[in-house]
Length: 145
Image (cartoon, rainbow, N blue to C red; front, side):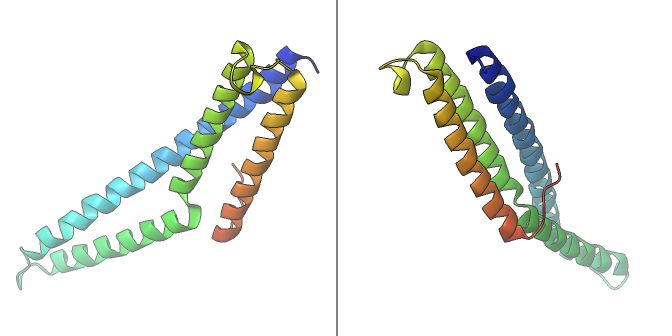
């Protein structure tokens, strides 16, 4: 495999994967957190309006509490925040490594070597996969995305 093929087929494709996956996790995390915040601040507000005639408000407060607990459970299970940070870190590493390689700087300042690039990128992705596996084992579910 030559330099262009490795960069295109491995580094760029891995970057696209991590970038896409990181955006998905970020969007899910932020969306769910927004809902939790919105519901959390609405509960004290709604309790101020409870009267004998507003039974539905008591139900709404209870439902809001259940939704908050459900969302926090989902966040805990799927660890969107942790996965977002892992993906962001991986995408940044690949970008930085490619830049170092192309500019002959950083770890490549003493000589540009495709072998060195491959070893560094593959070592990093191997470690990243171990981190992902660890997070997946903690949550007890497989990620099919």
